[in-house]
Image (cartoon, rainbow, N blue to C red):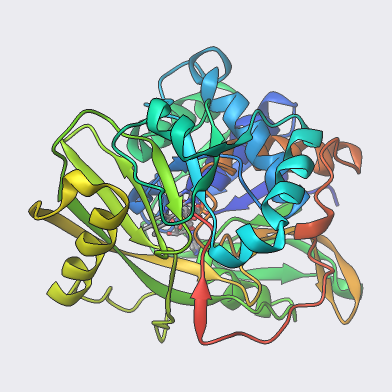
Length: 394
Ligand SMILES: Cc1cc2nc3c(=O)[nH]c(=O)nc-3n(C[C@H](O)[C@H](O)[C@H](O)COP(=O)(O)OP(=O)(O)OC[C@H]3O[C@@H](n4cnc5c(N)ncnc54)[C@H](O)[C@@H]3O)c2cc1C
């Protein structure tokens, strides 16, 4: 019997919404279900950095495509994303600088088409006088990168998906996957606002469901090493104009300006704060975290010394052991599971890659292959055991 729809997407954050737009535009009959409100959980709390400096080629290729899509968001999706090209600097660790890994990485990125280069202290002073990189003496600069607005991005994608013919069902939870003879996934049992479990058959089911994905995947015998992990942000009063968006590896922070007159600061490396369940309450952001974030910021942007902390927020990441996402056909006992796809485990870096991964997955599902090489984020890779100290790319 033919499935009711070609594609069922579970999760209405940036990845699910983007996939819905691209799949529906590519002619797949598409239903997206979202347990809460469209716009996602991690998506609406995101720092929303849009930059291309990655250590692995697949993430960099996706991020580059993401940057291109954010630069032409209105044209591609019919509305704004709030993208602002502040320029971006990656300040390397002393070890990276001394071992020459930065130069090799920049060459790899340039080979992919990323506009980026190593700059010294003097040139950085001309690009952005607010930044002090005298401790390291160098940084990697990307002129086109910056940040976007999670709310604008999600609402534009929502409209674009509906306009393309995708059916978007909010307040609708996928309870379990429907597994046919031979183990193929053939749809899911859904519960809408009335709570009545209703099956929907689909040719393909994609889990864009963040830290909830392991629970759903397990109903088809698929084990996923994804842990819900708490993360925190500080907002510090900004005393000058927009500065660069920065990943500061020696200080273990990332930062960017915002439109409310502050600088958003997040920790790039921190001791893991596992949440027992993705439904658990987010932790409070304690004052020690805020003081520490403000002090780290002031070392990189000296004009922030003594600036007031004006806000904070916590969020949840869907961490994999190696900090890279799982994108592609789901695997069970070493074999792909027909009908089931993964697009989760973004580990704090899935905002910028939301639009391009939707594009790439729609192509993969429709044609059996992707133009972008996604091998370093493959679902078939071996995952190393989780470490206690977490590093999220952002
Ligand atoms: C504080 C913070 C800062 C960040 N900073 C950056 C950054 O600077 N740059 C960057 O690129 N990324 C960043 N990220 C990460 C990025 O925001 C996320 O990786 C991205 O938003 C993930 O999108 P998603 O669609 O996969 O997940 P989500 O937005 O979490 O959406 C998943 C959705 O699935 C739904 N769902 C789950 N289970 C079910 C079910 N059974 N049935 C129906 N629906 C279900 C959930 O309700 C949720 O809405 C940050 C994240 C946080 C929290």
